[in-house]
Image 1 (cartoon, rainbow, N blue to C red):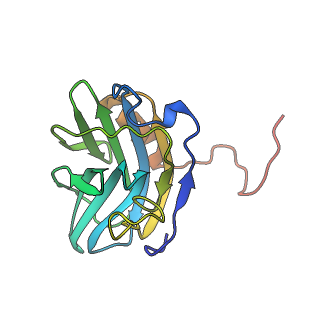
Image 2 (cartoon, helix red, strand yellow; image 1 turned 90 degrees about the vertical axis):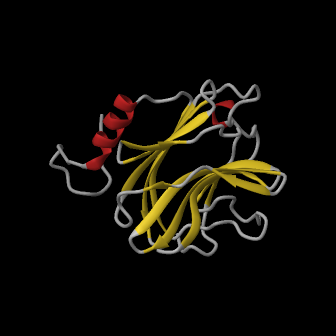
Image 3 (cartoon, rainbow, N blue to C red; image 1 turned 135 degrees about the vertical axis):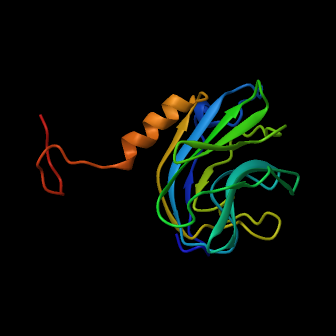
Amino acid sequence: FDGIEDYVGINDTATYLDFPGSSGSLNMTWSFWTNSLNYSGFYCPIGKGSRGGGIMFCFNATSQTQTSAMACSIISNVLSCSTNFSLSKVSGWTHMTYVYNPTLDNIQIYEDASLKGTTTSFLPVSDTSSPYFIGSGFGPISVPTTSYHFKGGVDEFLIFNRSLNSSEINALYNSTVFHTNLTDLRPGNHSFQ
């Protein structure tokens, strides 16, 4: 993503993509790999929603050596973000996991399967129809004057309709850290029977 206007939209036509569900009681986990090329400013590799309401998973880079992660919600054009949790890595591929637990009213933020922090009193935003955006907080919509476009790569974006525990997050991280070809097949298209 170029950090200016690139993003991928995923339409929300299924209830399992809704956040946090019409009753506000749906546990969810979002997981993705990110390789940021933003070294300053506020930017969001993943978002869902619109100016009226939504959620974004964002980073705030204050220098080439200091970056923090947070979860943000927007209600009626007002952006509200959790406490910044410092990240260990600023560059290179990083596995990020955000776990929403409505019973505890919080989001846990993991970097490379290590818990970085837990938000307190995270305000859930019910959103059952807006698309998800990869590469931008809110796609082409200005919120209120920017879409918080992301510069870098996003890979293996996963949504779970439950809160993963730390063991599951660790297994997910370790299963995707190393890509090993055990088939002796060269890269390309192959047919299997």
